[in-house]
Image (cartoon, rainbow, N blue to C red; front, side, top):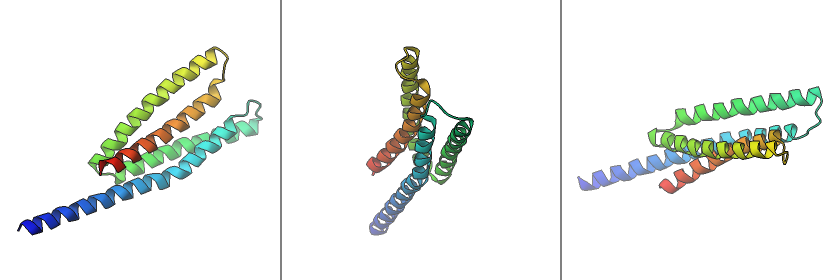
Length: 144
């Protein structure tokens, strides 16, 4: 009886490890195109002298980046179990705090005319998404 219970626990742990690994892989696979889209949006918006067409491209790519982040979030939450959702929400909370502090520093730098707000705000938001991915991945890896 004890051996069956032990084998059942091992099978459950293996299944949970596979689910965790699949969830991490899905987030990274979904996250790579989103990160590339964010980098493109950053590159398009970094030029101070833009034509109307350049601004339209920048707004379109930034909108696509925003929608893709939402899409990744929805997919991640639908795939995840309760513990994975907890990790995702805690990771997003930490990244959100980092983004808020970064944006506050960017506003101060813009107010003193050291650096413009627009290029900094894009980098901060994209960096916040990256921080969220990294923290969620590390917490998932360290859980095992």
